[in-house]
Each structure stands twice: as structure tokens, then as C-alpha cells.
Image (cartoon, rainbow, N blue to C red; front, side, top):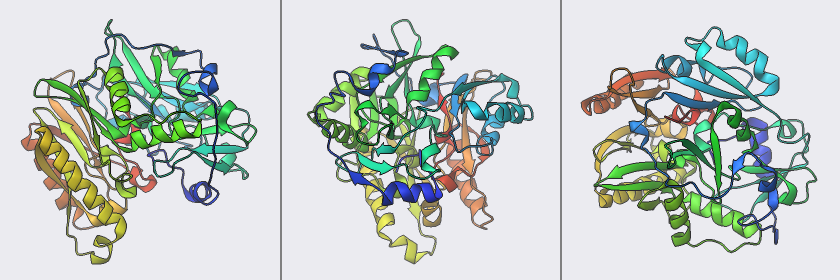
Length: 426
């Protein structure tokens, strides 16, 4: 599952109503198709792209988003108030939500620095979704035949939507995929004339941001860029390769090889190497993005989740948990081979199955003081061991010279996290 997960009955419908479809000849990688009506997206390539590790950014400018089912700021308020007082925030919201959100911002600390940018429905109506999943070989057709599915668009998970580079003029460019999770099909037959779920990102151009499409499928929460031993690299969850292949097959294109995928991403990000993580099987449902498993820090340090025994033997031996253990073993091996120094961030199995990921953090350099800081999630459900677990995690980061700020969040209830809610431009 992606961070962009709909909940309740809608989520069940997306899975239970799913059926694979085969489409031929749309040419999504090279010509025509649904990208043709995206005049605000830049063609060609970004000249001399440069990627900066997130831990070297300053939270000067950030993007946050609300989806159609987000009626208020309950998931975003605590994070907005924890941002530095110099942060400038662009908040994308469905147009019909704008008045309520602007009223809510009047009671948020530094809310005056939040620019609310409205966006429209992707299309007046749609009869089906075409869903992109890493564990399926083709796009999945899901009829939108109830009111809930017929009105779901946008997302609250800004981190998933794009990756940031600077170009030869040192201007920021947002790299996004044509499809993040699904297409909206007006006629319900095929996505050839469908509308991509990333369409609403076009509304960032009035905010002075440039958009660029690359013909790959990835999620920002499943990608880290870093500088290690004098080389620039990108760590990418292997589901990105699987999803890119799914799009190609569904549109009758040649599936890109791993080498081709890596070369395209290296060129787009301006890095020397792209390292795929977790290539043997789809990434685990309980840890579907890399930012739920690790955080990269300066000096070749990688914080990595270590599952600890909490006495819940029934949960500990569940197949979904075992899949996470295998994924973490492979991740640790990959990072060690690259030369990272690993530090453990403990996580109980109970927290894992509840999507309370303690490592889903936001690293940055305070632009006023130069101090390295971390915004870290607090999932407080009253358990007696939570305070001790939080203290152990915070001590690990403090010993790495980070100032730690705890931010309460309930994002785990929607299978996301603190880092998922924000995309840092600079």
C-alpha cells in the first residue's frame, strides 16, 4: 500500500472490486496519453540537476497537502506549529475546503505564513479508478460506483508526490511521476483518456514552483538521496521498479530493465548511483516505504529500525511481521555493503502493526542557529512502555548531535506518519 491510502469502506472497495486490465498502444512513455493535457509541466530534461540530502535542508519552504476527505487540520496542526517560525508553507487544498481551512489557520501558530493554494476536482466525474500497485502486474480497474469512491481525490501525504532537485540556475524543480497511485477514467473503460491523480500538482505553478515529469513510478517516501564517500547516491525501494514495469505493461510498452530504470533515475536526480532496496519481493505491507524503516543522517550514518521483543508472540510470528524482518535484514545488509554506520532505532511489534513508525522523522538544519534538528513523531495511546521507548530513540539522535523536538501525531491510524505529511523544498 502507498502512503496515499484511503480508509474504511473505500479501502475495502478498492481491493474487493479490483480486476486487472490489459491496454495496448497508449504510448505513455513517449507520446500522447494523459500527459498531453498538462501544459504546466515542463518537457525535456532538467539541465545539470543537483539533489540535496534532506538533512541538509532548512525547512525554509515546505509543501503540505489535503485530500478531498480531509475536512480540517487535525492531522497537520501539530506539525504546522512545530515548524520553525521562519518556515514558509504552501498548503494545497480542495477548493471547497479553502474557507474552512483558512479559518482554522487563524488559530495556528505562524498560520499567517501558510499560503493556501486551492485545486479543483481532477474531472467532473469518473466511472472507474485504475489503481497502480507494486504487487500487481497490470493496472487494476476499480468501479467508482458509490458516493465515497466517486468523490475521493487528492492526498494528505505530500511526501509521496515528488522529489526536489535544483537545476543549472540553482532553481528548484519538482520531479514527479505522471501517476502516483491511480488514474481517474471518465468513461470507465480504459485509462487512455484518464486523468492522473497528480493533476492537482499543476496548482503549484502559481506559487512560483516548477514541475517536471519523469516517466517512472516512485513515491517520495520510498526514496532517499545522500552523499557518501564522495559520491552522490539515491536509495530507492524496489517497488518503484515494479510499479514502473506495471505502467509500461498496462500501456503496451516495453518494460524497462533494472539498468534502464537506474540510469533514468540517476540522470533525473543528478546522482552517481541508484541503489534498489528490497528487490526479491514487494515491500512489506507493514513497512511499505523506506522512510518507515530508516533515516539517513550526515557522516554516513543510517538509523534503521530494529524490532524488539514485546511479549506479543502471536503478533511476532505473523507472516506480515516476518516479511518486515526479512526486509530489514536485506536493508541492513545493503547499507553495510555501501559503507554506512548503522544505529538501531527500536520498535515494538505492536507499534509496527499499528503503523506507529518511530523513525518517520524530519531532519533539518535550523536556518537561524545552524543547529541540526529532528522533528520526531509521538504516538501516544497510553501504553506504559511508550515513554521509555521514546526516550531511548531520542537519546540515539541526541548523541548524534541532533536537537530533538517531539510532535504528537495520529497519522499512524491512517497508515502514514509525520514525514509523510510534508515535502521539504529547501
